[in-house]
Every structure is written in C-alpha cells, then in structure tokens.
Image (tube, rainbow, N blue to C red; front, side):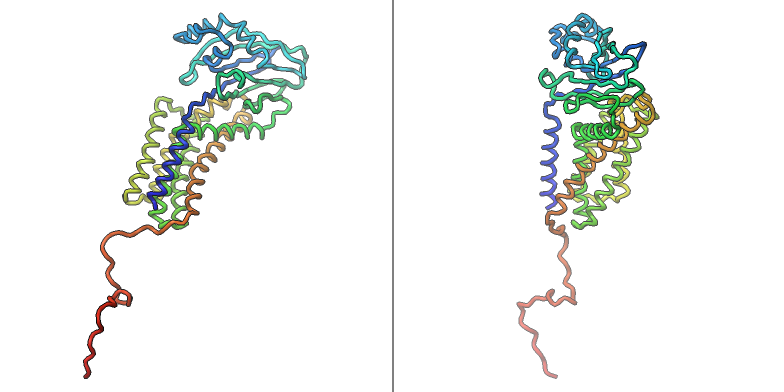
Length: 388
C-alpha cells in the first residue's frame, strides 16, 4: 500500500512539475516615483526584449550583442518607446492627466535578463495636488509579447508613500486610497505564486509530502499519531529554517550569492527525494529531531532564495520607510509559507482519510503461544486416555 501511495504522489509531483515548467512567459517590472522641482520623476525598469517586441523597435535592437549596444539602440528609438507608453502609462493629479517626457534610458542586467531603464519626467498642471492616480498597462495581453506582467511601484507623492503591486487584474492605484490590507493581500498572493511556480520550491514541498507519507505509514503503522508526528517534524523544521533565512536576508544582515543558492536548491530537492526512497526501501527510521534538523537546513537555503525574490519585488525596507517597506515583505513571506504548507498538508491529509491497511510484518514465523488454543493443530486425533 505504501508503494501505491508513493506512486500516486510521484504522479502528482510529475504533474505539478509539468505545470510549473510549462512555457509561460511572465515578467516583472519596477517603478519609482517621487516629486522633484515641480514635476514627478518616474524611473521605469522593464524587460528589454519584451519592450523591443512590444514597441516594434526592430531586429537590430533585439539582436544587440551586449548591454552597451542595447542602450544605444534604445536611445535611437525614444520616440517609438514614448509612443508605445503614451496610452499604457498615465499619471493624473487630482483627475488631471500629466504630460510625459522621456529624458533618458539605459540597460542593465536583472538576474539573467537585460532590463531597460526608462527615465521619465511627468508635468502635472495642478498646484499641490491632493492625490495622484497611476494607470499602468505596459505589456498588456493585446500586445502579445508576454503571458503575464506585474509591476512593483514605490512612490512618494503628495505626502503619501508606500509600495503597491500592479497587475493585469489591478492596473491602477490612487495615493489617496492605497489600503495597506490590499497591498498585503497582493504581496501574499505574489509570494504564494512565486513558491508554486519556482520548480525548486515546488519540488521540495512535494518531496516533503512524499517523505511524510512513507515515514508516517511505516513509523506509525498508518495511525493518526504517526501522520501528525511525521508532518510536524518535516514541515516544522523546514518552515523555521525558511523564516530565519528570509528574515536575515530581507533585513540585509546576510546575502548569499545567487550562484551559490541555485545549486544548493537542487541539492535539497535531491536529498529529500533520496530520503523518501531510502525510507521506502526499509532504511531505519530517522528520529523526529534529526528530521527537523535536516529539513531546517534545507529551509535555510529556500528562505535565502525567497528573501532575495521578495527584495527584488519590493526593492528594500528603506525604499518607503520601516512600516510601508516591512509590511509587503511580511505579506510575501506569509503567502509563500501558506502555499508551502498547503502543498505538504493537503496531499498528506487527503491520503490519510483513505483506508490504509496495517503494515505487513515479515520475518520468521511466529512461535505459537501456549495460551492460545488456536496455535495447536486440530486435524490430529485426540491423545488416548489411559485409565489409572
């Protein structure tokens, strides 16, 4: 029965992996807005290749061999870029639309992708506006260049400051109505989405579910106590490790290079799958404390990666002040941890309600118990009775 359950979870893992690694072109961008000398300075950072395709900047811009050449091609096409942004990026002050000027541009590397940095100046014909509204539809679905796009906006406008995530479902926001709970819900969704769409995080979570099923059924003979103990030992250490490393990373106390984290993520996935396979083949069971330590160590690696992703999404704690900057980071962590727990607990709980036969005992034949009458053969004739 354990083998059948394992096969089912492996099938689930394969399905989820296929869904996570399917060809979905998703990009993220970053916006920084602040008031300066009577106008609004806006720095927009977006995927260079997607911009070239969406604004039809030509083959030379798309095939430029390095960032310096890309920056030159981008500077040559400022009019086309501004025309593309004209109806997709609008800022208004107290309901009056601001005019946009593209003052400069550049290209830099964001992780492994070239990003275009566009420096905009927006002139708003309103003195001391009470509120600003930003409408953002760069790389919308009708452009046909990416499947999804979101943009993290850090702003200091009209006495308001904060961080907000703009998506296709929510393409605009107003500084007068930036609800922190709305921001938190959006960042929590982004954290959960990041965890389930990143293959290394997804595979490790499903591997943990596989490990819990195998070890709980062996160690606890399928009892509820065995399942709860196995789930707690596996997920408790992992989530603690994630929390510690995530906190250390987002506070800037430590930063592990991406070149180090990426191979370590692969190692953690291989280790948890190997651990489950060895448990299935009859290896002596690890104690709960040992399992919590091993999953906790893996959690440190995944937490560092999640922290780096959160900082890339929200820039830094100092960008918008302690409260405005910390809340999105906490929400991102909450969404990621809930998604991780769901990936482990939901499959385990589903399999737990199925009728599980007790683990079969192998080895030498059981010695008949003299107190058990059924232990004696009944097909032999009774012994003769000798009179005294």
